[in-house]
Length: 209
Image: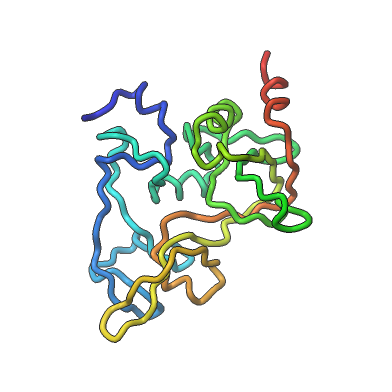
């Protein structure tokens, strides 16, 4: 089943659809970690991370809510686009808008230096996200960040085996870590600084004509 454009637009841009099959590739040991046996230049980013591949068939089948499409997440995270509509993320003098789980007890000046896989949003899509996004329903924080950088990837860590690499847990590995060559990346990670927690309802009210 292929959905119409209006139906597709109701589903976040970074969500994987059931028609977007994972592209299975044979993993081998390379010079600096894992590699695909038939690796192509676009399989690896400029930081040395090898990327998982999915078919690009957005709108085909059913949306797999909660399953992020690696190439689309990478695209919006790099370009500071909204994760839901893929338009420009909301930004003002306090920075770019993000939504994240509420972990204010994790460290004293949280969310400063927060590392997140959740891309930025525009205001209209942020209003929808807090109502429908499963990972935000148990508590969320809206924040703005004046400075951020791509610093890491989230993916499956692999280890050397006697013949082939073997998989470990999923984890965040920073680009300056030598282990970056041993990760099959699924999502980019941004580190946020210059953070201000904001009231999303007040932001929406102020934006309403």
